[in-house]
Length: 149
Image (cartoon, one colour):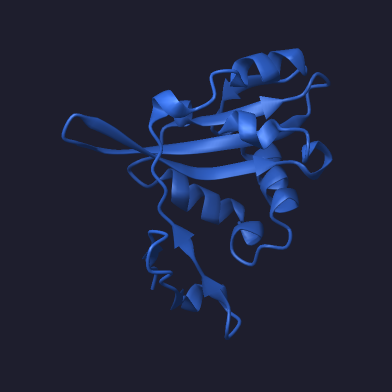
């Protein structure tokens, strides 16, 4: 069971997939106009030796799974993804490798990623979801995550 917390009611529900009794999964629905996002992300990335490229299925699976495990080592759900879990996610109808960006540092090491979903249009508005944001432990705290968002 998953309930969305819209920051008004503070709804929580027990999620049986989390395993331990008493663990609660809480999801927040936040909305942001794209025009309000910081325009300097690409400047930060290039000035700090980072570069982005789209995920390449079959080539990047292993390095991404390693990054995910490192980034979420203390998270009971996300940190335990197997290759099978990953394949199940990418085989859902919404997966688009162009919306799954990997960020490499100036030494060619995977430093982070951002994975987005696009939902059906609501009227004239395109609706997206930040599905996943990872930053390697060795790159955390430098502003990379903020720039990837």
